[in-house]
Amino acid sequence: MYRRRMGSRAWDVAVAPPEFIRLAAHPLRWRLLTELADGDYRVRELVERVGEPQNLVSYHLRLLRDGGLVTARRSSFDGRDTYYRLDLERCAEALAASGAALHPALRRDVSPPCRPVAGERSRRVAVLFVCTGNSARSPIAEALLRHHTAGRVTAASAGTRPKPQVHPHAVRVLRESFGIDLSGRPTQHVDDLAGRRFDHVITLCDKAREVCPEFGPRRVHWSMADPGAAGDTGQADYAAFQHAAADIDTRIRYLIPVLNTPETVARSEP
Image (cartoon, rainbow, N blue to C red; front, side):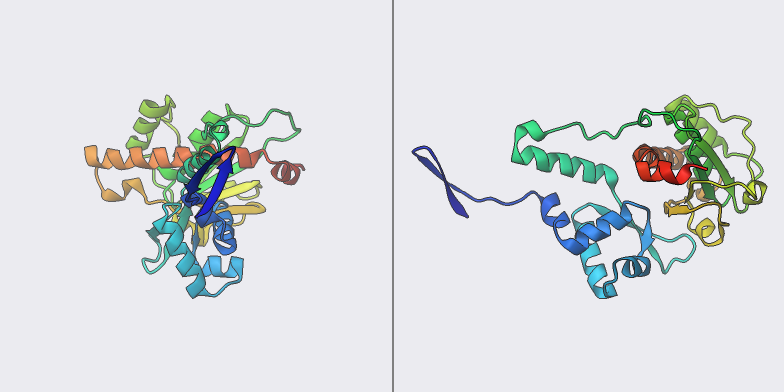
């Protein structure tokens, strides 16, 4: 607490920084946030990336989880593992609120841009989404990236063990929620893309992450549950697809600015 004077008036003002500032200002927590902004990681991977002891990393991850900036889910490949994820929506809201707490004029719209940055280049950035069955998560991601960029990004998807067809609930949720027609879209195996190069390869399945071939210089993992894992059709199952599509849409909207950074554009030039 300190005393601030303005003219002849004085107040005892208890100044406490907003929760986001308090959490993010710590050097190691900031480093963890920046690492998780790139993709989802397990604790041992974060330990390697930040070069700090596991107990220290786990402690600060817990603080970030308690603060709502980071979430965690059990790996569908190895239930003993946990993937940590940065909640970008929560971070955007908290960052905007922190600015407004300093001065009302610093309040701003936190919605990320949904269109690529203006400017033509000789070659479009190519992005590949990979999951196991290529029947839900990866085709949804491919369709949403193409939709939000109006086709200005080359998007593709494949599976390590593709199903015969795209799940009907995936087709339905894209049609009802985004006006995208995915009916009749065939699935494909990652082997079908052998020889192709992608600027970004994004795995959406913990199992696929372990066996996905190398397709390009930048690989990112999004740890997401399979909405079709519950079994047969039904309203409860469809709700899982709605949740998955909304989650993927959020990630796609935050991915788009990354695809248009100068570093990405430079890497994508032939």
